[in-house]
Image (tube, rainbow, N blue to C red):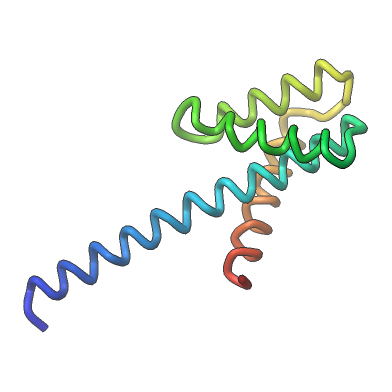
Length: 105
């Protein structure tokens, strides 16, 4: 296989992996938003709208800290008792769930 073909294959794989990683993160944030909304007693359109706001919060900075801060702050504001450790664990669980969902689609 010529070098150019290998380079193109590598670039295509990188683009695909990057897109998949973005989709997994967005799906995780949506699932997290729906979970947090349930913890705060939201249902239906309110829960869906809150989940969208969690997805949008991820565009503030690289990494998960922006999402963590938003959800932790919202839960505390609603007096929902969820420790930082539990929230981070839930984020990790939902990341695995999001990955599994996308691989099965």
